[in-house]
Structures are given as structure tokens and as C-alpha cells.
Picture 1 (cartoon, rainbow, N blue to C red):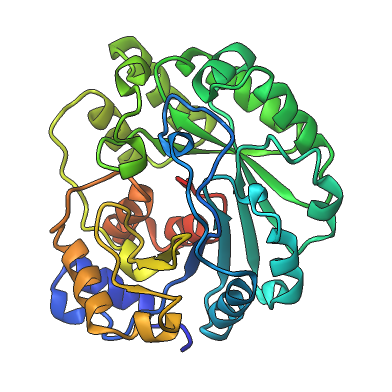
Picture 2: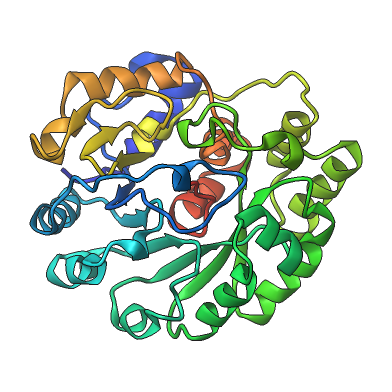
Amino acid sequence: MRLTNLYLPRVWAGSQLDEKFLPPDIHPLSAHIKLTENCQARCVSCDYWKTTWKDGISTERAIRLVDEIAELGIGTLRMTGGEPLIRKDLFDVLERSRARDFGRVILQTNGLLLKRFHQQMNASPITHVNVSIDGMRKSNDRIRGVEGYFDLAVEGIQALHGKKVSFTVTLNGISAAELDELASVARGLGAEVGYNILSRNLFFLANADLVSLWPNKDRVALLERFAREAMRRPEFEVEYLRKYYSHEALDEPPCVLGYLQVFVLSNGDVLTGCYPLPPVGNIVQSSLREVLASEAYRKQAAAMVRRECPGCTCGVESSLAMKHAVSSGFFELNRLLHGSSSSLP
């Protein structure tokens, strides 16, 4: 299964004009794998650490899964979690699989183990490292629930060589006034800055303390300015952020994530790029190719375009870019899919 030159134009036409134009076959551009959902951080913005998860994908199945993703022609592989570096066989999986065939192998990490594993990291096929950092030292450690988190993550980043690094910031009210300083720190480390948006409809945020994190009017203005000036986000995206955090009515874009990315959870469940919706298959029971070709996957991806879902903020920048593709071209969408786009676990 290979991506054709008409795939993205068909996704655009099917999502913006008429569903009949949607591609009949699913060709995701990126695959997100969770080999574990356990995490040693204690973030107030997340519930993962409150549960002990059982990893359901064996080493050998993980290797075959990465190979299968490569064979499907998917260009970007993202290893996420939980905390992926907790999985002891992570580097074994990457070395024994076709991970080096991908244009980008992204590690989404809290950064707490980067320093310990920097030698394995530097020798691995990983090309991009996205580190979850939400503010300067005091605010970040408060949000992430680990004293010394900020310093340890920065030390780990400094030990990396030959990797493209990005700070992934969950935009919030606590650290809103520090984001310019944080961006300066990132630049000093040769890193970019990406972002996530607080969401109420994700299972791993169900009991998170969103009230303390939600920005007031003044902090929303700071986030808006940061997105526009420091991150140079397009105006339609900045406007979405402002309205979302201000609790204003939103003209939600058709969600195209079902056509752009596929998720595999640590128990093998396959998601159509969407956490709130149910799985459409399981790679422990069948191949990923079979799941992607299934009627269940196709129907759910099309339903997402119609927004027949609880709604969330995952990857909304990609759906916004698709909605505004006529005015901005596909350049922004390609940057999001192949660069340092935002990424929840």
C-alpha cells in the first residue's frame, strides 16, 4: 500500500466538498505506537501515572509491527506512551526492525530518562525527540509532578547528538507568562517548540486538574500572542486557540485524522487517529494491513470527517490546515505531518 499523489487532494475534497470524494483506501502518513502506557511522571494534566498498565505487545510482535508499517509505505513512525523509554526492549525493537527505513522516527518522551539512555538514543534510528516541557523550572515541575524534572530533561537533551529536538508544551494558564523565556531556552538548546491543547474528552485526562491549568482571560491573551509571534502559527490556528480557551463557540473543522494517522495502543488495539472513539481492530489478532483495509476503519474515518464523535483537540491543527488548504496550500499541512507537529501521548 503506497501513498498516491492524489491522496491528500482527495482527503481535502472529501472533507471540505463532498464525502463521495474521500479516498476508498486508507493510507496514513504517520503511525503512532505505544509499546507501554506506564509513566513515572505524575502530571496534574494527565492520568496515565495513576494506573499500572500491562504491556500486551511482545518484542517480536513489535518488531513485526514496525516492519509492517514500513512495508505499508507510512513515512513517519512515532514511539509514544506513557513513557516509551520505560519499555526495556525499545532500542532492541528499533534496531532489529526496519525503523531506519522511515523518513522520521519520533520519540515522544517526558525526558526523565534521556540522560540515562543517551548513548542508546544517539546510536538509534530515532531522528526526532519531542520532550514534554510545559514551563520554566518551578512551573514545569509543579505541572509534571516531579521535582527536578526540568533540569533532568534539559540535561538529557544536552547529551543528545544528531537528533532534532522539540519542546512539546501543553498550553495552560500556569506557565503562560513564561513561554517566551521557555522558547529562548529551547532555541539555546537548538530545539523547536510545538504544542498540545488541554482537552476534556480524552480518557487519560478524565480526572486531570484542568481547572487549575485553564488560563484566565489575561493568560489566554498571552497564549494567543505566543502562538502568533513565537511559534508563528497561522492566524486561523491562533483564532481557534483563542476561542477554545475563552469558551467561545467554535466552527470545528472536519476531522481528517482518520486518513492521516493510525494509533496502536499497548494492548494492540488500533485507533483511527482518535482516542475518544473505540478501536477498530487489534494487531495481536490480525495484521495492521488487514485493519487498515477493514470496513470498520473506513467507516469510522469517514464518520470523523462528519464529526460523529465526542470531539477533542488532538491534531486539530492538521484538520484546520486541511480546511484552509485553498488559501495556505498544502505546505502547512505537510509541515505538520512531517515536521514537529504537536502530539499528545
